[in-house]
Image (cartoon, rainbow, N blue to C red):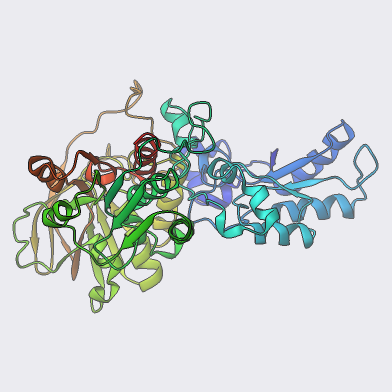
Length: 491
């Protein structure tokens, strides 16, 4: 495998002259250098290459996350093939040197087109096969809609290596645990009537597996569409991988309703009375989180909206040019990217902590921060909101030179369980200021909502009551799907 270029000069441009840790790589090898090196490798006995771009200091390139386009490195394989052909360089067996394409090629149509057009000789898949090990068989059979797509989150695969955990997959709970969970589900010994409250990834995953095991399952969703938080999170254009996953879940629900005892009731708010009337054997709560809405001073007069509400109703930002987002987690940053690039807004994001998107996979974090900077989004870390107003946000901002550069993507953050003895202490130089805003967006995440679950227990609404997904512990797709799967295979 060979990166045709580290692409650091192209990524960081003037910063290559300004940042000491980048200066040493300023005169890195070019694509031309690499191609001539590859020609020498052929003479030395190398038979096959796969090519991409980037290195650890722009980690999103060799580990393309959600948001990077499908087939993002096909130009690289095409360049390598044309170089070998133009220079009449043959492999050691006398055939054209085979070149393998990599980089988000889990889309069968794009992968096949690349081979047919001669952009590569083969395609290499890694994460798509973690998401669905039957990818090749399904593609060959033409059952593309049944392929479980990788969502590009890299939380279960790449990030688990960084955190010292067990490599797995957010959308496929069997990955890495194949010896524990059989490929085919064990039929339920006792068929039960089960209610699932909530149609997000946890509720859907549980309902599909429980129904396939022989249970009679009824899923209730209060809105008009399935998906929960992923339905909202998939709205920005850069979240197309998540939209594909939502489409896959919807298709699986359709197929399951045709073949198994599964019913779905949308636009239905579940009450204790409904559950008591139906007398279910088991009730599974998976209804999501409560949004965090701090009691900021002045919030009554401020033009305020929750990030999830704005994503579903972008018309509520009409007339607002300057938008301040409170909360620099992944939702806040993705919303900022969406507002700037799809609606042309001026956006500022405020974060109390020293770093934005702490805990997010390095590649995904770096990719988003890089393009937020290129889009002109102002990122203020170490900034605490003190009060809200009709025309802005009052903050206390630490403007010390020791505050980390919020746009630094060349130095990955260490996991919180690994102390960094070389980390410099952050000094305080607090400045009070007002940031103008026509609209204030709260993107401070959510917390587990266990209210209905506890009420059901007190009312003894079923013999078995479980709480999974975000209503149990606010988390990611990884935790929601994994928890639902573990329960569904044993209930």
